[in-house]
Length: 208
Image (cartoon, rainbow, N blue to C red; front, side, top):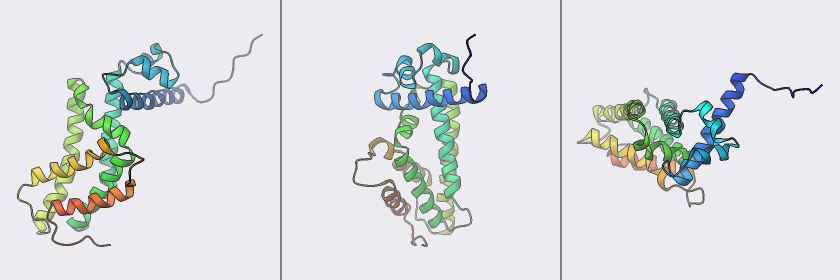
């Protein structure tokens, strides 16, 4: 009588682990080949599965992209929440927010590049959902900018464009950052925190 090997973990746990492996494989494949240059077979092979197995968990490679994008944007919102102290001065708030934002995009540059530069590949419904998350990210940074204007700490004529510039320069780190480059994520974070204060014309230095 043959004995079946004992499976560890619940079916739900095994399914979650498989989904995670597929997402990790998709992220690397999209980073290496771009979304349109990646096939389902590429993703399945990297995850050690058959192409048919992918469709058990995701309807398409676009759904994998959407899940990566959604998770990435939610983590970015969480990063803003962790670094922003509404009770601090606007100068300290912006310094902390942009330091965290820059470090986040440097350390997670592979996924961040996919999340921010493959948006056009999303289906309209998914693109709208991601658009709402991006709007929320913008709203939170804009709140810090507006607080600095109201307090007189920032010298800004156009808060909308200034907020866009702050976010754009942080996001773009994911495009060019390399682990072999001369700056560490921490050094990039410090530089961008300082640069952000120059962009808004901060009148005082952040407290130590």
